[in-house]
Image (cartoon, rainbow, N blue to C red; front, side, top):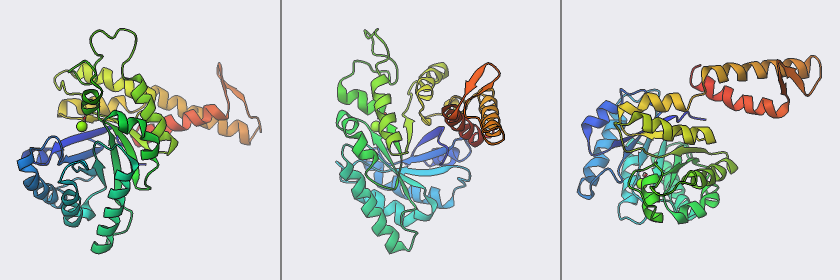
Length: 302
Ligand code: GLV
Ligand code: MG
């Protein structure tokens, strides 16, 4: 499983940002052809992205390109030009505004055809599906199960809030007047369930107030606490916070490794299923929770 704690959005129309992105310590970059690129700049952006993928140094990062959504005229050419031009230098395509499983099936089929034509390994390029409106959320279970190429569901909060008429302009923050709880809880949990049902990762979208790193951290923490794997970052100022929030705390990681060690010893040497570790009772379920924290900690290099 790839690490996706920090997922950097990079407009494909800006060669300077495509350069700079290579130097940032993020787990994933996605080079964008969609909403950060103006309609008249889309074609040039495709060429910039192909060059950046082929010639750039992206080592250590998962390389993703976000194509335009299927209601536009651009998607098929986005896919063909990017994958024919730089398919061997690409890990996944991100499909935005997915509303229905047939959209992912379309992309899967097109990718297979291009892979065969180009002599690439069939099925290597993965898919990330962005869920950005009510229809996508209601269909999230079917979308998550629609292709073996799918690696992650991605929440698109800006488009999503617009599509449901949520009364706020600040992405990720609570709508003014809503004092009962967390207006995002249902959406995040719904996506998490759909993703985990099919063993996919699930990623939170952008926080637009790039100067407010504390706000970013607070909103990221909310998704991380539920079990999300990472969050988009739009600016270098958000990168360290994302990597930190989506890694386990050192103390939790150490504790998880201790549980695994103790449990291994007691179940195999002493043949006991539930045992005490200090003041804490641990059993097979504790081992599973510890495995999750330990895997994330090891991936984060703790
Ligand atoms: C991202 O694409 C969003 O709409 O928030
Ligand atoms: Mg969007």
